[in-house]
Image 1: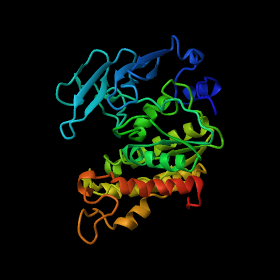
Image 2 (image 1 turned 120 degrees about the vertical axis):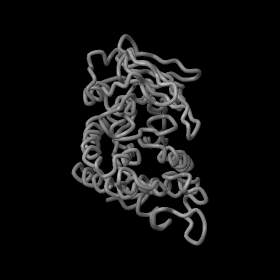
Image 3 (image 1 turned 60 degrees about the horizontal axis):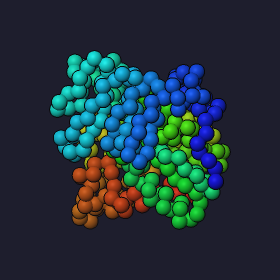
Length: 346
């Protein structure tokens, strides 16, 4: 088995690629790190970041990237009743009823949403826990949809005795979220929860997607998406030895209109931009969008009747962009075939 607890040149390269000083990289568990101790596991944050609670992480903690003295906040989402964790700059206070910092201080990028005018930052969840494997390691970077299908992919790989599958970040909720969030949280997404580099070799795979948290600006956000995705891809290529595979964003099948455009039309446009970027970087692309559309018909997907979508019915309207277990099995089998079989990539 390959041991995952090591620090070396790859970590220094990773931190340099995302604009973090590497002067203390050899001492990442010492003066340059903040250790957030959870009940069963540990999350390590960079020394200039703040340990904050994260209800969805593997340790109950995450890392706030806006300073070592940030204010950690938690609020309950009015729609889902889920606890949301975020952080505010030093000198501000948490809003009592919504995710905002008081006074409003738009001083940093949005993180989980596209745009430049945010007044708070999401907490970056940690990467996966250390693991060993006798086969191929597959790491999936993505949002809540990939969080849905990654366990199915993991079971397929385990059943076939082919290796190990992990998701980064190792959390629930929105996962890696948007391109903005990926850039903000890059040191954690490309590391284990201990801040050791992901233990990936040339024979392993790094599967990634971003898009469903990027349609909120409508067609006006396409240029920002392309710019940030290009930057993320350059970092992946510089720091990850494993083979890269991009999977196209799945349909926004019951979202409606956002900022003057049908959300799914924005997804189509985002996929077009992503394919061009991957082609320019010689990264294969797995099309998950087309087979789902073929199985379910036109947007919005139906919950009932002769044209009900078998991948999300009878909950398509409520799920909006997500799928039932059947849908996630449908997706996972296609990813499995792309990694271990003969599925077509472009």
